[in-house]
Amino acid sequence: MSATANEPSSTRTPPFERILCLTGLTGEGAEAVRQAAILAGPGATIDLVAVAPRRPPGRPHPQAEQIESLVIGDRTASEHAVGSRPHIAEAPDEPTGVLDTIAGHDLVVVPDGGTGLDVLSHSTTSVLIARAAISPSTFPESILVAVDGTAEAHAAARLGAALSVRHDTSVALVATPEHDATHQHALQHHIETVERITGERPLVLDEHRGPVPSILAAAAGVEASLIVMGRRPGAHDRSVSAQVAGAATRSVLVVRGPA
Image 1 (cartoon, rainbow, N blue to C red):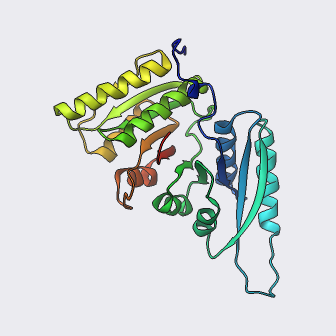
Image 2: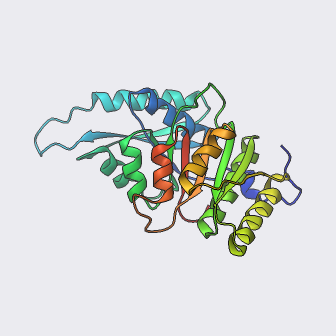
Image 3: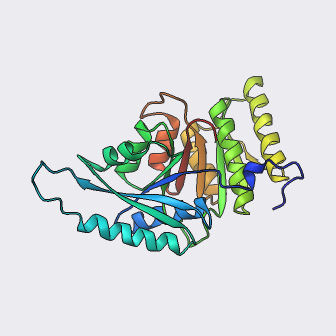
């Protein structure tokens, strides 16, 4: 994949400056660290957090499991030439521990599971819910960006294009099922943005079902290992992004704020 001569510098540098990743002793925890390290890029450093149950004052604080998960996470990051800063957060539950540690980060990576959806519902930071690819592949092997007429969708299109250049992979767009002039104009704007960044016109999938089934079907159709989409401020738990993040079988990156 070739970028144009006027390619924005953001495509040549990591799109996220500070990444926080929740670790764990499961395979899902290791996959989250792997994807966080790949997005950070060689030479970068990511923050790893393990959440331990909060104990009353004077009670012992057993953290052997958390320490082990951080050691494994550090080893996984090192395999991708990425450093790590380990941290143990004491909190009533995992989502609270992650949200209490999120300040100062522009991306939080969480393993597949209930914690990820809870973090997504309350985070003002971009969230990646990491899932292993259906077939062994390099992450991200193929990127699908879900777009509509919102500014958040345009931020997702820019980010998806930048990631495709950085990781030398394909990017496709799936458009909202509305076909009025406003949405068609927005789609053309997204296409031009991706083409300007990547140097190639993206594949555009025209789905006629509801937003959620359209995005899931498109992701399966292009065998995307990563779905990128925007999320408006104040979006609720039944928003399109939340429903896709909960139902998808591949990683979902939900963009909050500038990207």
